[in-house]
Image (tube, rainbow over all chains, first blue to last red; front, top):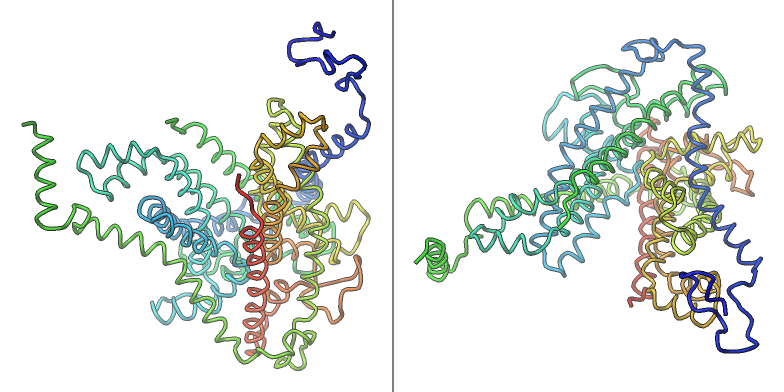
Length: 310
Length: 303
């Protein structure tokens, strides 16, 4: 009997059956190999992160050997990054202005008003928007939103490429992100809180806005932040529709190049490997990676900090 | 009688008298209208997008669109054969790279790993972050990976597949984990109680039960990869080539890349061709999505 082996060893195998070997002690080389292989695949994800940082860091070091940091974080010049950051900020803000009310509205309808059957149809329909390739959205912004919607219907004086059209279409693209995650957060609010509010004489609109929404605020905020990180990292829409010229301006009707747009344009052009303009690609890429990483960490921390447990 | 019950009686009385609950006052109706609008705004945009693109490209829905190579000389019959074949090749090799690693990682995390250990928690947090890394950054990573393997020219099948596989790996891992987690504990316990090892249980019981969920998630990941152009630009795929892919090291283009490169052409015919190609791309992606939904509805088990 191996009753002294430990409390968590469970009942000893073969106890009471004389002659049966103790299978728990049997070494299984095959099992260990498989376990090792699976562990390796899991580690690939960590290697990928390390790889991203390593892949970016060498060209970035080379870049800053040629270009002083002051020229990188400058408003003008070949390697100035501030106009690109401004472009990204502009398109992202426009996208959020479009996506937050619409995404939140869709989420509130789905979680508070829609019947179970309606939700089963409507939710995938909203999520269809996320399945459209971004190059298609970019083409749409360029060939429909700017000429037809902004210039003809709204008679705005916009350029061929402009931050407004890119931002609006970007906003449409992130509606499903905001809607889907907000809906999860709203649905998670316990039914008793709604019933309490309704019993006090509030109607459904008041209940939704004053009880359910505040209770789900942390999840909704995380959804918005995640949508924002999507908008910051999106490439094709802004590469096609936001413009290919650095432009530090507050006027969304002008074309503004974004960080991702710059990477796409530079990578698509003829730049010999190792040249300063090629390394600039990695410097901007590194900045983009760091910005989205900070946004994500912020979103995770936000959920942890403000999560209410019911 | 307390105020509360008076109010309750008044509300009930007015509801009975008018047949309208308080949900029907002007403010509530406006609110509901706004919710309806936000729900259908996206659908409207999608409809406008599809209809306007289809109308633009209507004159080019001919066989040349998918059988011909791109041509600068005769823009009215330029085709997307190389892009369509390139996209299909990329999908196959992306799946071959991403699916085994993704499933392996998911199985480790769900069935073998002790979630309390710090390294396993590191992998979890890391996965959450990777899922939100911009797609264009994966292109930069793929360039570095290819350079490490000694490839000068990265605009080949392997380069594109590495970039796309890295991109969808987090998606595959996350969806596989969800599918594996949905398999009830009892099935594992039953298998273990009969003397199977953890791996035998995983391979013969858990994994087969989770296959529909894994397939659905993987196909959805691939459909996302099919529409991506940003990492492919960075990897250096050509905007157009005039031959079919022949192997892992053959230079290719992809359908989204071809569409992107056409937008910088000023001739009207190229814009028409791009619109028609967008419809082809949407059909391919919708086809993949439909396949995923079919698999989910046909094979998904609930316990």
